Amino acid sequence: MNDANLDPAAFWEQRYGEADRVWSGRVNAALAAVAGDLQPGRSLDLGCGEGGDVLWLAARGWEATGIDLSPTAVGRAEAEAESRGLSATFVAADLTDWVGKPAAVDGSDRPFDLVSASFLQSPTQLPRREVLRAAAARVAPGGRLVVVAHGAPPSWAKGDEHAHHGPSSFPTPTTELADLALDAASWRVEIAEIRERSAVGPNGEHGSHFDSVIVCKNSVVLPEETPM
Image (tube, helix red, strand yellow):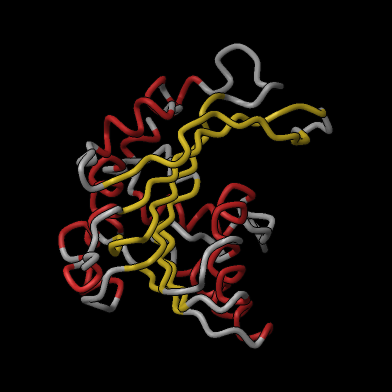
């Protein structure tokens, strides 16, 4: 069966159920580089997995929320937050549902100072463009949208090893910005680049990952902030 035809919820529950931990638990380096210099506020992480980014933000004073499709992943994130004594909110929900009614899923009518989506890429069906556009709509004036994606197969990949992803599964900063279709009068693109980072492959190979990194700031000025 083609992965694209698999039920997303069943796929990710099986993926998380096959291991005690799927991800490293470390914060995404690109997100840390951006958020490390920001005043803590309200944050939302889409496709949060086991909560590494959310927990990093919570530990630095953010009112942090994460959404993931897998209840198993969300349960692990909640358990980790409790073990560290951190306050963070995790929601098990389909981002397709969130696109239709964001506030009903993420729990607030208020926008967020930081909305992130790190490696929101799936071999199953995912309306990624719609999710990213909805993410931008949830960013508060003065807030930022951070989108990090696998921009190419890892350096050790050979042949058709990653062919099941398809070309569109490796976005570039240009294609990301085109999909977001942000209003240039309301948004400022702060970062749009491919970043290389060192990594170790499944067989111990030393190589690189190539990440597409987008950081956009909602530059709308609220009426009360308009200079006199």
